[in-house]
Length: 434
Image (cartoon, rainbow, N blue to C red):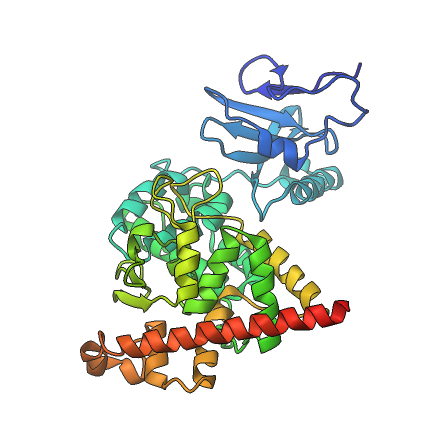
């Protein structure tokens, strides 16, 4: 029988791992895996550490909050040193944590002064405030902002996993620069947004931290503003995408169909609530607090949109039109994996590589399609809820409720066009199979 995998609880004797393991396992099965980490349950009290058998000293720690953190334990100069590597997340995966741990262990072995090779522990602030400790008060101070949902999403997904456990006045400009540079390699726009939100946090925190000399984000490296995107899906791609979305199912399938048919913004669709829809009048009212420009927006619904909404509404399930699977109180997550899956399926449908596209490109595709159908520019801007160009300034104030009938006609025409493109794709697919 293989040795039972064990965990180590801080300050207490070693006890068996709660998840257990079947007997007769192969040697080396005590190694950490993503499945094991995701299955870990938070302890009732304290913290629990689970060792990795592949990289000696590497452990994943879970506390009562459920947060999972990689730590490296190394004995140096007769003393155990604990090095926090970071939160288990999309940015710090298990392979990345192992790579990081191996680099530190190698540095320790190669340096003449092994203690100097280890990352120096950050000094705690006089207040002891970490970013995690300050976050609830900061969030409360911004509760009235229209974009508080986006601020919270950026903090929870990017900033808190990286810096949450750190003393707020111990984070340096260079650390933030490296972090932002790393994000910018994948998503330059998001990198700029993260830096802006983190800088606003430090502007708020500055008078609350005596030892904070200044806003470390102020002079941190800022990625250049990306060039405006011009990607518009072709007719062939639109027809094929609709076929893919029908097979995808909720929440992403119908949500992306709504994005394409209405031209509204991603958050406006994915955070929609059932109460915003009046199906008898075929009308979707996006409240001002959820609209990017703060202006309540009336979106006439074409019959295809009404059909999608009817399939999603479940008043016994909760307020969210598109809830997360297993949690009806919040919106869906897992956008990166879903988009990778949908992009791959689209390429399979068209039978060739498809240039990269994003959810926001669907909004541009809708706008371009409306123009191609002969819809006037000011009506297209009204559909998109733009207060720029023809509807900006004082003109926009008086035209806010204009063009309703024109918007309904425009979106109905675009829905018919998408249906036509979907039909063309189906006929083409049948002919190819013959």
